[in-house]
Each structure stands twice: as C-alpha cells, then as structure tokens.
Image (cartoon, rainbow, N blue to C red; front, top):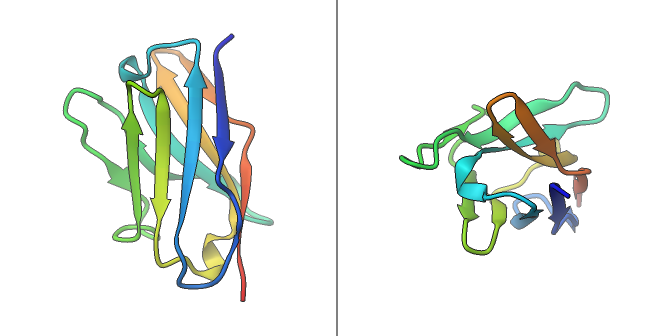
Length: 117
C-alpha cells in the first residue's frame, strides 16, 4: 500500500514554530516530487512548498510563506517535513503532504494547524 501520513499538527501561538512530518511507505521517496499544500477555512487548497526534483533539491515557496517555512525530506527514513517558523493566524489551515511521479500522485489525509493566542 502506498501511503502518506502526516503528524505534528498542534494549536500554536502566533510567532511560534511547528514542524510537520509526513511518513511515506510503499515507494522510493527519492523518485518523487514532494510538496505541501494547505486549505484554510472557506478557501481552496493552495500550494505551500514543493521540491520537484530530488536530483538538485531546488525548492519553491508560496510568497506568503517565503522566509518562514522550509521543506525538506529524509529519503533514508522515508520522511517529508515542513518546518514552519514565525507562524501567524493566516497560517491556520489543514495541511497536506503530497508525492508525485509521472501521472500518479499520493496525498496525506491532512492535519490541522491552528495558530491562535
């Protein structure tokens, strides 16, 4: 079974930090493009960050999170991460990890991140 499972979501105060983890199984992670998405209340799902090519490791970020979020992965551990710093209320959303190869893609179930004082 190919699977992605997120963990690490919490209620966090504004200005705080949080690391989301996504455990993969059933495939070789280094062969896949990886990404994180989020869906805020009342809004459509949007891309947060991605690493489309494991060979060069180049990363991309939505303007709203540049300088605050960092995408990374550990192929040996089959783990995908999103480090989130300087969180604000607008970051409140359900976050999803994603892995893609060719015409196939896999999604995590989503994990709630709530930023509130």
